Image 1 (cartoon, helix red, strand yellow):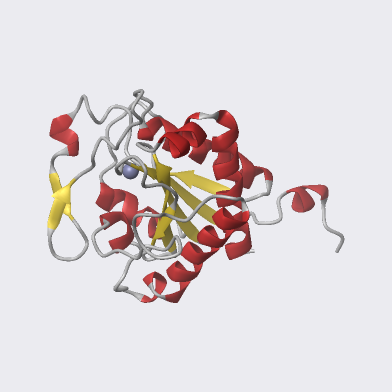
Image 2 (cartoon, rainbow, N blue to C red):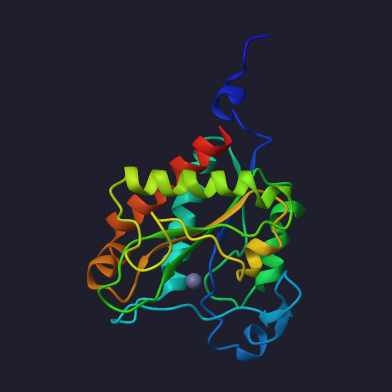
Length: 226
Ligand SMILES: [Zn+2]
């Protein structure tokens, strides 16, 4: 059988990718929602969500995360992937981190990528990528580490600097992120840069910088699931 034009245009119709833009624009106005305690995936609890950080001039992390995630969604959709977002706007509160963490298995995703930016002291700069460690299931083991490594490699290839202040070579495996702890599909979280650092903030606040972050994340996802 010859491939139909539709098939050629949509080579991965069965490949679902979850994108999780961190936080949400309505979180700060809804403390009762985001401060509610939810399971953290390792036997404890933590707040449903946080407001996220911001740059010194007020540009917010949730806005950055939302912008980059939409760029990645558009690029993946154009390549024929089905993309599911953890939130559908930038003006709501939640979903909680445990709900974000189970989304991958609920839609049978091939990969789950959470997109964030950090708020560390000025002078500390660069990106880092987290995956769950120690792993709580097979997906959190080699598959998630490989997804995180693909993102790290793609970010380095795109010219971004690995973090100067946390982790090692841009990798920062963690046990305290509920979204990763609940994952039963390959999952990683990227902190694209430090919003409190002038150099990183300039990248984060510029449309060209956000396009570069999105291109690097897209290319990592394609290489991982391809
Ligand atoms: Zn964040």
